[in-house]
Structure formats: C-alpha cells, structure tokens
Amino acid sequence: MSQEDIVIVGMARTPMGGLLGELANLSAPELGAVAVKAAMKEANAKSADTIFMGNVLSAGLGQAPARQAALKAGLDNGTQAVTLNKMCGSGLQAVAMARQALLSGESDTVIAGGMESMTRAPFLMQKHRSGQKYGHDKLFDHMALDGLEDAYEGFAMGVYADQTAKEYQFSRESQDAYALETLRRAQSATTEGRFKREIAPIELKTGNLDTDELPRKAKPEKIPSLKPAFTPDGTVTAANASAISDGAAALVLMRRADAEKQGRKIIAVTRARTAKVHHRAGPRDPKSAGPRQLEGQRRRSLGDQRSLRHRADDRDEGARHQPRHYQRQWRRLRAGPPHRRQRRAHPGDIARRPRSARRQTRRSLALHRRRRRHRASG
Image 1: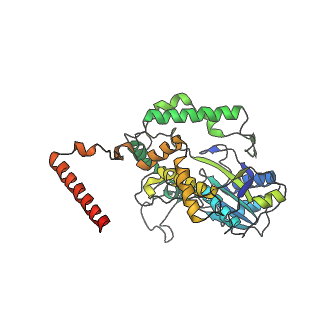
Image 2 (image 1 turned 90 degrees about the vertical axis):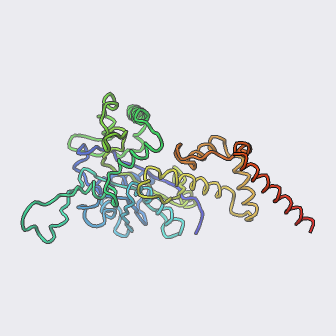
C-alpha cells in the first residue's frame, strides 16, 4: 500500500443545533447534504468516487443514509456510498477509511464525515411485530438504546464518565471550570466570526442560520448549581457533559500528488491510528490512541529508505531527544490514575528492607558474581 500523504482539500460543517432546537425539522441526511455540498464547493470538485458518512441513530432514516446525503448534495448515482456506525468515533472512522481507500488506489477523491439528528431519533416498540393482545407495552428511546446506553450493562455513558472522573480525581469544580472556559471561547469565536470560514449556512423559515445554537443560549451562571445528571454523588452534569446536538460535517480528501497536479489548496495532511479499549473505558480512548499515533508519526519521519538497523538506532536516539514536557505527559498517561501508579525502584531500596532480606540479597549477589567469574575463567 502506498504511503503517500493524504490531504484535505475541502471542509465544511453545519451550525450545531440543540435538542428540539433550531435544526429539529431537518433529518440527518439533509444535514449531511448541506455539509457535503459546501465541502465539495470549497474543494472545487464536481464529483467524488466514494463517500463515507458516520451515523449512529439511523432508525427511521430510510435505506443508505450516506447515499441520501450524497444525492441531495448533487453527487451522481455512480458515487459509492457507505454509512458506518462506530458510535462516537463514527466520523473519525469515516476519515480513516477514506484515507485507506486513497492509499490503496481504489479511489481518487473521497468524502468523509458524520451526520446526526438526535432530535429526530424515534421511539421503538420491540414486540409489536407479532401484535399486543392485551395489556401495556413499552417504548424504547432509540437515542438512549442505540446511542447513549451501554449495550452490555445498560448504564448511560455518563455513568462511565462519572467513574472515570472519580478514578482520575477530576473534581466537579475543575470540570465546571473547563466547561465555562470552553463556553467562553466558543462565544468569543462566534462573536469574532472565526467560525464563518467552516460553517455552511442553512436557510430556515425563521431566517438564515449560520451560528451554533447552544453557545448563544447557554447561561453560564447556572452551570455551578446544576445537579449531577447520572449518579447521585457524581460530578458530571448536563453542562459539563457532551451536549445532545443535531448537525453534520464533511471533508474532501485526495492524494497529495493529485491535489497539487489539479491545483487544489491543501488544508491539512491526515494521519490515522485507532486503538481498542474496553467498552466501559470509552472516556479514556485518547490515552490508547494518542501514543500509537505519535509513534506512527515518528517512525514515518525516519524515512523509508533507511535500513532496519539505522531505523532502530534513530528510534532510540529520537526517544532521548523528545521534548521533556511530552515525555512527562506520556509517562503520566502510561502510569494510569494516581492511586494505581507504582513507585519506581530506587537504588537505596535494599537498605530499607529488613536485615534478613538484605543478607539474603547480598548472598545472592555474591553467588552471582562467583558464577560469572567462573564462567569467564573457564
């Protein structure tokens, strides 16, 4: 498989709407079509070979939501369309698969993104295929059942966020402070127009929507007083947790050589690594994927023409010269939460052990030295 750079030549997203908010009347494929059309326009591309679109809540959308988005965006019927579901990672997995399609030579221009209308997720009746002869029945929320609840234990994902916060000693105050700072930055960026470059406006009956809904309507003064949303003694609230939103985003990707040949503006170069974690460890995904990505990036930078021996030498040398703050960050991540970290062995540890244990250790060391001298003389 080729290792040529895969680049982004077009990008766009819709404004993000809140639950039952300003985008409530648009389905996921309709939102996806807006993002795809705008990304294709920026890339100055009229067609694409393949489109990958992540979508989790697909009940009630009709067949092939990605193809619906492609056709609504004006792509032709020959475009291959794939709808994929990797939960919260669906959109990024679409980018990873787009990259693989380009590296393999299967496609020359690929669209990748994600689309979701959590507002329009339907309620489900699981037993009505055979009818209900008498008595009450139960409705299942598609958003909760297939999106926000663990399939194995039945808990909301926020419960695992609370567990992770407790394990890593993230206080309620620190999470609220993070939420408030994030909100401040989002409001500042909106006011200064820094999101206009990426947002594709949507025409609504009430007017032209070109800003995100939730930052406009948020009330920062209420954030510290909100009650825990998932567990009685938890620290995750509706404000410092991920929002329930509607929206879509899309990228247009090509091989660098093709983009330069066609005069396309290169926005960014993609790199992709994935990592597998236990289903309850979802909030810690970056801890597993981050080091793999950095290691893959460092190996790539060593060059493909060097011998294996030189690559190994450079790998060891590069590790010694990494910036110290990066070394400290990844050491902390590998060590795990504070209460699980083990103290490193210290040369003075032998002096702290009981006298009998110290004697035994010295005897073992003396015996090891005698055996080594004997082997050397023989």
